[in-house]
Image (cartoon, rainbow, N blue to C red; front, side, top):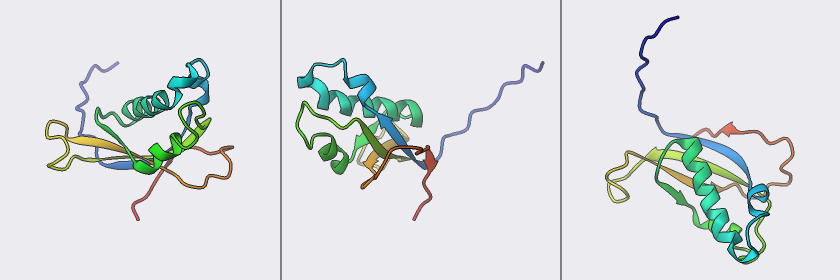
Length: 120
């Protein structure tokens, strides 16, 4: 067995689509805390998968989570997580940030896999 050190390279910009199951974590939460907790869960999921500390939630995703009030949140949500370079005005200390945005009009969540989104 070789014990060579592998040099880590800087993670580059990438965009991926994920389905986040909010129901399994929110069913144990008090109903008056579900929507804020859903936002926190999305941020935590993005930090874990995209390996960045700064996560920004898009307005459409926020409105989708809060559409039926604080009590009734969607069971699942399909999001695009984009890891990109931080601009000069956002956060100077972090090199990369993640932007979470909503994938609109998902008919069914069955058999949806994670996929890499190509730049348009």
